Length: 629
Image (cartoon, rainbow, N blue to C red; front, side):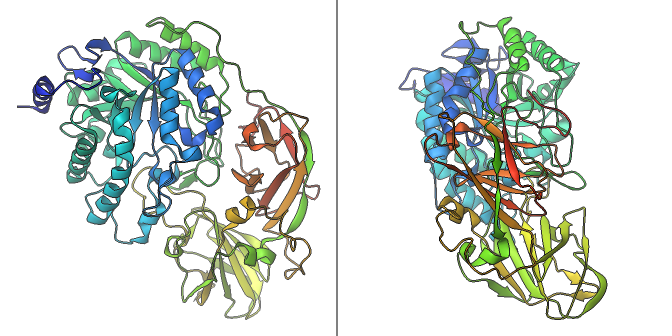
């Protein structure tokens, strides 16, 4: 007896739900049924963790007014469990408040709780603290990994259960894992374990599903008996062929494209990705015309604030930009685009869309130029940022070894010999993850870059201080390279000599800046400069007053190279003006204060312009050569 028949019989003998509501698969008629009636969802992806909570309702209303009847939501494990056993569901992490808002707006929810989510998010949502166990095999039946997964899902899923549709909530389906067929492990024991865990914690009536690329190879390892297999793909010309793999694995049941790509992501150093509105809407029309269920990924992309962006590995390491605009129907700032209105027109041909005007874009303002003053170099303020004394070891330790999961760490040693002529300082085994800013006696020498610049030529004397400030640019979120350790993960050599006797300085820069550094720290700017010849990495700051409003804006940093931006203590994200394509950072008005000065803090890593300033604009620049509307 196959699983579909067993599931059908199970539903026949299950007691009615307390709410009297039901959501199930009708295999006979190839559709979903909601409260007994045939149902098709037209959904869009939105990530609450990429949108300020003050704007959640605005974005959800715009999605509802487009004609969507559902949203699709990832839950990033690392966002909610930053340390083992420490859980955070407050503020911008208040998942339950977000789900309640969706319900109030009138949107159903397709929930994707992982434990792995991809999402171009650091490590695909898996917490980096898992890597403290060097022997762990992620996304497998490895006992250490399953123990951590069990602990996490035992916290998360009980919060979800009351919100399932049959329990009176708005969650209609729940995904197990994510695109597992694209992962090397192909561990059916792992998938079976997850299936049992989800059933135990959520019950027998919720529809559980998987999502994979639309090929037999991907579905073979990504699907499992008892989990409804769905696929993902972008604009195509042959819809029947695009759904063929799903039909191979699910001969009966609804057609589902769980990730219909409305655009694409950007990498630092690449071109800005766009996707034709005509192609997106034509394929959407073709899918809806054959009765398929569709989730548009993304409907709003949002922003990778702080250090949260992930990376791909396609022959080389490709870090994702701070903007996750995705060329989506709602822009990074949540503004309706021409693509949105074209999608709304298509949806209206198949189902009713709400009457009334679309909520307008959030107002934007060009606050203009803000002068920025150099505070001092990073090396002069190490003591401010150290949560504990430096760790000493013969050879370099990783971020994970020292329990620093994001941001920056300083590695320090001494030159063991004279280097009279330029001598390569290098990691021949590509061991700098991800960028290493090299200084001799505080003077910047160049940057080591993963997969790109493996050596920097230096000169110096025996005993000179060598510092390498290593920046974590985001852990790989898709493919096989998940054990993406950060820092100096291999030895560094000077010529033929392996360097040893290292000190590792874990830097908690964010905690200081959120506590008011440098403005509220009296010694900053007054202390004696220990590194008089040092120019970068360096901190800059400035302040600006608002003209009585706190509207959204975009900050451009003309002539700056690469670094990190904080506004009023909030980590807005990375900029890499010298590489692009992103040239502005989105600054939500929710970060700004209308009555007191607003503080800008910048850590510039490679070189600031002589005339240092920031420029607030009313429009983003996401491409190296054009304005984006």
